[in-house]
Image (cartoon, rainbow, N blue to C red; front, side, top):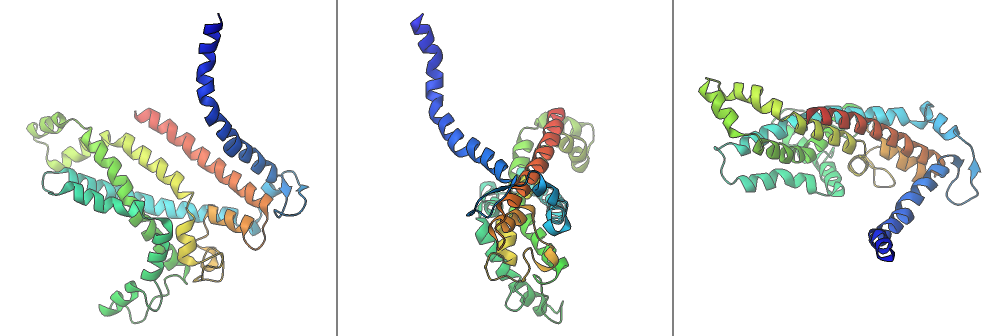
Length: 304
């Protein structure tokens, strides 16, 4: 009897270190941050309980919450389809028999994804600098413009730069998944289609693309979730938190590039240090990500 009881508790004994770390560094911070979201606190003084006032303030235009959510959706909605289309095209090209040194080109295309966000932000800041940037010099050299474009000082241009940056960093990620998806498609299907007279493009649209639907769904949902966590790249690109900004306004000119996480960071740790409101923004973001995760899980199960 005692041996049976000991055997039953042995798994919990091995799990106890993980559970202790989870409770200490996961569960307790989550519960504490939720409590903070119900208070008015600057991180030093006494907490004042305000209930749901912080969550109600998210609907106030001064919170910039929905502005930041709209900006994030715009960046993801434009850059993610480009990443997926280009990633699929590169994956199909690398999977074909016409390309040699496939492993080398896979590595080269995937490298941008593993570059640190700090390096990406600084690199694009140098590329699109108004006076000394390589992009302006190249456009001037070819006579496409008469004077340098203030890429990071105009809302439309700043958003274009953010989209290009996200596209450059993310298409290698989608390429890897599409390569794995292409490798799992039976070659017999394409051979049978060729026997029936289907061309390569028709075979791609009728066989390859439908069978890649689970991969497409997965890449789209993970891309949306990852896009809502965007912070370091636009912050370093446009400045903020004393980083030598291209704009005096947090989030770029007219806050056109203010992402949800950047808004949360600036609210909680910027000049105002409003921890309670910052925590409320974080939980609002959590609900948005949870919604997309739920939708993605539903579609992914239907596809598989």
